[in-house]
Amino acid sequence: MTVLLKAYTIQFVQRKEGVLNLFDYHIHSQYSIDGKMTMDEACRQAIKLGLDEIVFTDHIDLDWPDNKAHFDMNNLELYIKSIETMQERYGDRLIIKKGMELGLQPHALDELNLIVDTFPVDFLIASVHVVDGMDPYLKEYYLDKTKEESYIKYYEQILMLIQKFDNFDVLGHLDYVKRYSPLEWEKDDYLYGIDIIDEIFKVLIEKGKGIEVNTSGYRHISDSPMPNIKIVKRFVDMGGKVITIGSDAHSLDCLAYCFDRALKELKSAGIAELTRFSNRKPQNIAI
Image (cartoon, rainbow, N blue to C red; front, top):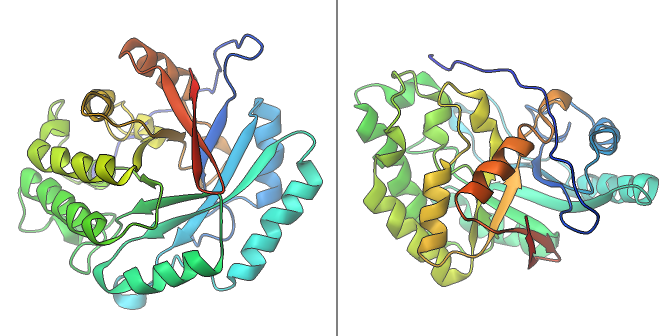
């Protein structure tokens, strides 16, 4: 699988008082099967890095292919209680919010709605990790497909699911296939399926939903977030107003990954605001 990674040191842009709160809205702890840090470790690292706010967004993928692994949390009550414990422990130094990353699949939407209604949180990411029973994380998804076909198939699944499902705040890692494709990356890959991306954005904007700038993309050979900043700008130009930033960190070294660079590139593209959430209510702040 051709996924080339780049290493960066986190260096934040110097902040003037009151100009910008730094926050990471995509973090995985030990409650995700692929998480490699505890909530306590994540909180201490966030404080060390100078973050003002984080959201734990552990995986809820209810049916992962072949039952080889499950990303769902076995005890949601314990998950929520653990976040509350972190709030009590570190609340004087760090704003800590409750979130989930919902893995959308056609047959799981009713159960996801029930989970969200039963366990209220501050913020919800809707992500697609499985298409036709295959996770693009695995090489089998790309067999018998051209690169363009692998992207378009993924975007078509996103579009179908967000048309049916409303219980989320932002769409996670729009071009997830980029991160794991075994096919050679090219600089214009972000344009594959652009017509479908526009349809996705129309649905999101109509529903008042947003997208995230997922900085894990900077660890890929493309050296750009997910999605590309040009695609983020396209969302804004179409009328999109909700944009969060998240590292998709599963380990301490990835927390707030390349946020300084992402912020510079967003500002250079004329994007003036990012969004934070409390009790599922958005608040835009200047960057």
